Length: 216
Image (cartoon, rainbow, N blue to C red; front, side, top):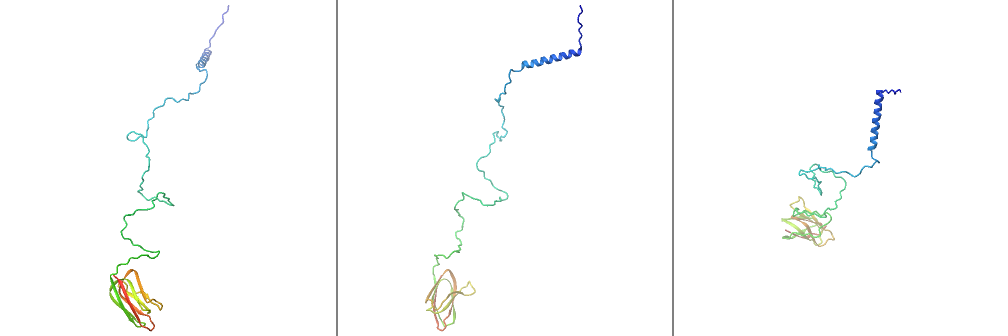
């Protein structure tokens, strides 16, 4: 009986062993795989401690300041343009450093009540008998005149005052044909006077005039 002749080729043996090993590996992977795929677990794992880095010098967490901050501008002023509405602006101010005496200028009318200095001096009965068209001047010691009374008996005349504070006479009164017999002139501010000038404006008759000065 003839026995079969077996021959082994080295290359074929190596190839066969590689195929067997690959098959065994694939089989093992199939046996180890789970029966069905499971979705990933969304629940987070354990938390890890984190150290705060924004700490102050005492190791405490820094906190931003709250409230209203006072800001002082130390450089150039801010250039503000347009209109600014201030809702809480006070309606009145209290000023305590004003001087005790203030100068007041009245531009819209005259003062209704004026307090004059008390009368302590009077120059009375300055009599002027003047011919028509003649002027005459009477001088005396200075007086601060507050009022003048003129009694002219219906004569036509012109009255001026001489004062040491002016180089020329001050015209204060002029009469006419229909003037009153007596006239009173009162000044708001006293006028320093050291003389009276009178002119008779009658065409033919003499003037008979009496002047009284009151002041201090």
